Image (cartoon, rainbow, N blue to C red; front, top):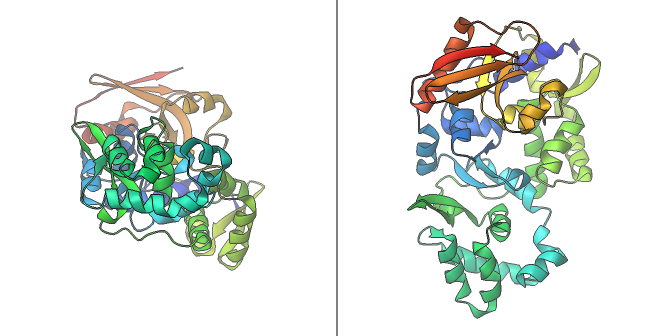
Length: 367
């Protein structure tokens, strides 16, 4: 099957709930994307809100309070939103590297691999009744003489020790208290499904990635699940082999790429319709395949994307950036040729304004 990149990206826009924009819940959007960057707070509000019709300011915060999604450390050591039903897939892969067993970790925290079961139990007991600030958690765990030194790492600015506990499913972030972050037991999240086995998690993560970010090469999986979550190349190859009867290879302008067999008909029948979408910086649209993917991020625009610019997509390809200052939304068109007219961008500007809870005047300029 021979396809064009325009077709492939048009199908992917649909899978990302960007064309058409979805009508589902916050949790459904996060579940479809796998993970959504959680910092700063505006990023998930926009990444999720721009994929939902009728979005309003604070939707993601309300979903967090309701346990529809939760916040934790996941990809690349950064905070992300995950769903309680599927989030364990990604945490299991992140934990499979067992970084806390490295000699440098043992030296830094005074914890041997044999100490970790008891240390984790102490942490879980500390948060069983309520969320705690980092300092409160340090104090509670530090009351056990055995872990007094290690407990100091629980309030470190780097959160290195907290990350390892979150990867293992012991903690996640809780509601802020007096503008201070808290951590809580993941069992306070009502639909928390726990961590599956590593192989089960790997196969499910591979399938989810291909169905949302496909058509893709094995290199895309390595970037997202390998570099992003520390899954090994050998393991990724094994999970792909396990799924070989459920995958199909398609030719996209000379590249042999993988797609789920269940999605072949939808992909090949996709009609390419001109689309413009506004997305926040570090949106999963670019972070999933990586900013080095020239089909999504033209090399000439990569520097702007990696430096944290908000994104303007034209047919799924980064074609500009946007900024908001006071009540003005400025779209900067980076692609050769005339920028889209105000009418074409107006709907996107209105959608963005609704999520931000403000009114915006649109200004379009070309570079």
